[in-house]
Image 1 (cartoon, rainbow, N blue to C red):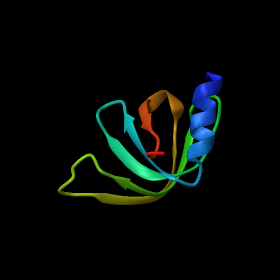
Image 2: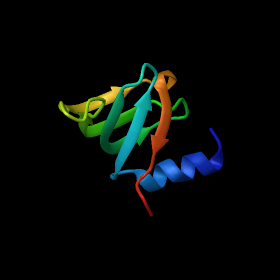
Image 3: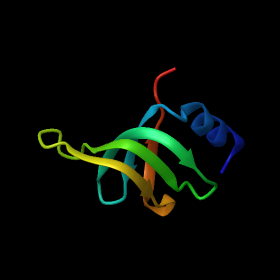
Length: 75
């Protein structure tokens, strides 16, 4: 992972991020941690794939090889 990506993720710790996964699933949650493989620990997570039917997931771990995009909060 590049230094710039690491810095952006470090700046996003404790903030709400949007994550798109393989298969089209979309998550929104508070980034609590990550590692060099892009494994993510999210808290207060919602599955927002279907905006009409948002599902609360709580605290989860997302395996990095499923992550397509992480959108950090606006600066």
